[in-house]
Length: 405
Image 1 (spheres, rainbow, N blue to C red):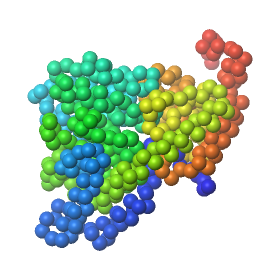
Image 2 (image 1 turned 45 degrees about the vertical axis):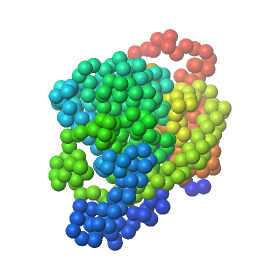
Image 3 (image 1 turned 45 degrees about the horizontal axis):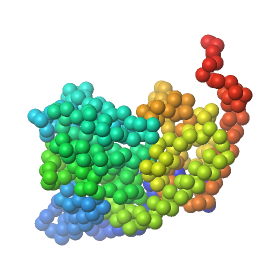
């Protein structure tokens, strides 16, 4: 086993060597521009792109013509929301999103609200982080043009009842966008069965390269039209101009295919590693809480809160393991995760949460080492915590009157 250990696979993944291998020729030998239609270099590049388009479409049960390449899921989310709002503004000015969406959806919605006067409904989630299809139905007005709900949450791994939400959208004739960045390649995704009209995904979460993503845009039943957010030579059916990143696209295609082939076995293996990690930690330590749904969750995600321990201190104490904390450091204040707040997790517990992202290249040995280090570090930090001591003595911390300095 080599240190450091990487357990932050929701943030990004290592590129699979098999993916790198398929990309290499497109940097040096097959280096044509896919839009050059009048010579062999262009044709070869275009062939590589079209094969990848087909591979991604097959993974989603879509048509290759419905795949639009972007620079990543952030751009795909921007294009979906801004493109729909602009194109359908005669029809209405209301969109519905969940309150635990990725920042690239939340911030895009905010921009549409402040700069274009779009009305946005932010749906609540239950204590597991799940969106209710009934809440979606209740939020719809005659001015609603888009519903956007993520497939699986990037922090807590909860999987939403997307097919049920898709049914509601279809009944009401409203477009449904799904940010499936964390789900594609990890769990089965079917845009037909799930009633999805627009879907965002990216390569670097599935052992592919960074800087390449895709937006699925339904072609019929209904045909979705989008106003572009980038103007230029009219690439990608006019929805996304710009020279295609051929090597990255080829890598994306390979990464998706490998995920499809390996998912049945890989999901089971990762879920077993995750459960092993959770059981070892929770058996040894008290007051450890699972964030997210206990069963409807991604196989490789584990998000735990450790009472009486500060998440950042925990990470500092385990520098040889790459993990992420639920409380992201903003410039001046330490804000607890908005996702955990939406679940109703208190600020103290939210600050003590750690996300473990297990991936294709992690071993049982690494998981056991991580559990051992976690138990040691939490124990040590709790020994230093006066709050933990008071709680152990049965003092109700909520009733304590703290003296002002």
